[in-house]
Structure formats: C-alpha cells, structure tokens
Length: 191
Image (tube, rainbow, N blue to C red; front, side, top):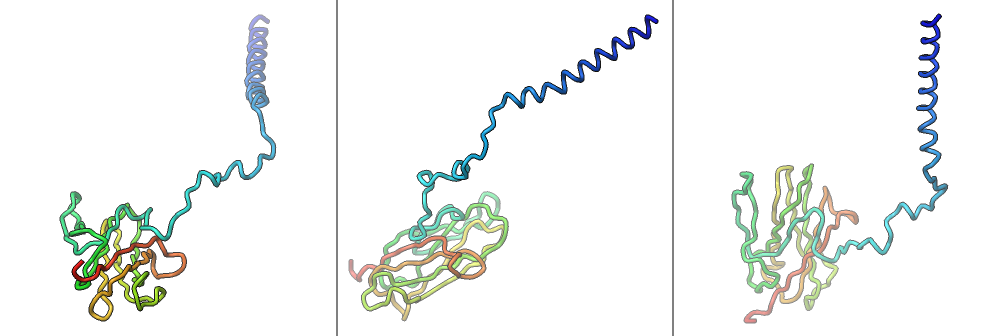
C-alpha cells in the first residue's frame, strides 16, 4: 500500500507540475501589452526620413564611382581582374578632343547587364537640347567590376557648350532604366 501511495503521490506531483508549466506561458502572454489595430503609417518609412533619389545627378547605388575622363587605362586588380581606371579625369574638354570617356567602378552584382550612355546637347548654341546626338553601350559580365563608355563628337568636332549624358542600366533603354545624369563642358578653343 505504501508503494501505491507513493506512486499516486508522484503522479499527483507530476500532474501538478505539468499544469503549472502549461499555465506559465498563458500568464506571461497575458502580461504582454497588445496593441490592437495600429495605423499602417506606423510601419512605413516616414517621409521626413526619406531622401529622394536625384536622377539629374551622377548615378549612385550600383555605381561605386563614375567620372568623365580624357582616357582610360587597364590595370590588373588585386583579385587578378582587369580594372578600368580613368586617365586625366575632368569635366572640361577642348573642341578637338577625339573621344570623351565615362569610366565607372561598380558595386558587386549578381548578373550581367548593359550600361548605356545617351548624349544630349544641354546648352549648346544652335542645338536642340532634346535631340539625341550620340550613344554608347557596354555589356557588363558577372565578373566585371569596372567599365567605360565612349562618346565621339557629332559631325567631327565638338561645339562649345554644356552636354549631358543619361546613364541607363538594364537590357534596353526605357523610362525605368535611368540611373542618373553625367555632365561635361566643351570649352571654346584657346580658353
């Protein structure tokens, strides 16, 4: 009889412990404050904290650096990759400059794509600013970390004035592919 009483006593203790432990989470959950139906704006970015992206400025995001230059050079990078570096970076060129280069370095990317440059005469006397006067594209492979675009003068020589280059990224140029805008100036001869 004593053994049966001990077993019954242990069973009661185990049952009491299980009941106590199963009630514990309910007690803790009941103590947490629950907010019912919070407004959606509480979970969104506040407008005062968001900086709008400027498509009329040099591209950011994918581009680590981007610059206009008189030329480029190819160097062996520290990962044994070919790295394109600008030669004489500037945003002012002479009218007899044969080619203007836009040289860029990219952040890491996980698929190939194309970088497009579309040239417009922003403030060039005698030219319509909406008229596309040149373009170039470069395919970027998965392993590429840098690249360049070349812009040749329309009709053999540059007219003095300010030019803009829309930089697009993707498979084709469309209203969603614009990443930013680069600008350069062609100075008058002798200045």
